[in-house]
Image 1 (cartoon, rainbow, N blue to C red):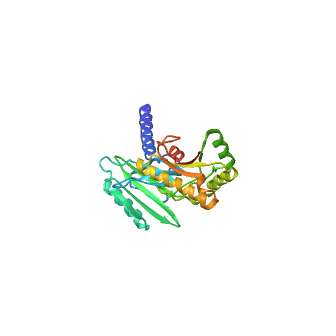
Image 2 (image 1 turned 90 degrees about the horizontal axis):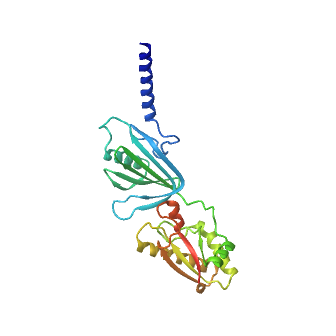
Image 3 (image 1 turned 60 degrees about the horizontal axis):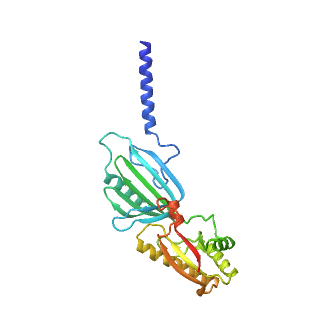
Length: 277
């Protein structure tokens, strides 16, 4: 009898422990401060935070809208009673109200499946998207910011590569998303190109723009050409390089140096190259 009693007690403890652990959030995961509460009977199943990442937000029609910055991805899993899971509409409406209650703006939504919006606070623009699936809620948040540039172009290194291979990729030249507007943090890299060209007065180069594969082929061709022309104009106007030493060209998505299946690869493919004429 004692052995049976011990077995039953052990079984009850095991059952309760399993149930408790089943409800616990994944290790090192927590709700984002933008949405400090969650739908009832959900646990955090997984999470990921990238200091600088990219996500393409859903749109009802047309291409997705990309945003870059601190990226948080949280997966919530339903743990409640069978048949009592909230509807997609209930989830969408809850997050819609949460966004608008703090002065945010709903951007796009499919009322039964997903919603995204943006909130601007203290000068920081935050984009959020919530998607409801079967037993899951996926929350993706981008706190928009410019990437901290750790690797910069160097005139001597650029010259060495051009002499040895005839071309060189110049990283550190960044543009506004889907535009040819050069970001301020690109000034140092462009200045190094200027130094290179001033040090070798006989050097003529093609300034070639490259993109990742996000968007259509035609739009990327135009965008890469426009970005190359923007860099050319900066070299002429800001650094006194003669225009006849430069020619802009766009390759779009046609010459990747890495896979476009990851953000790291796409970041390498979005570049400006100098090619010796």
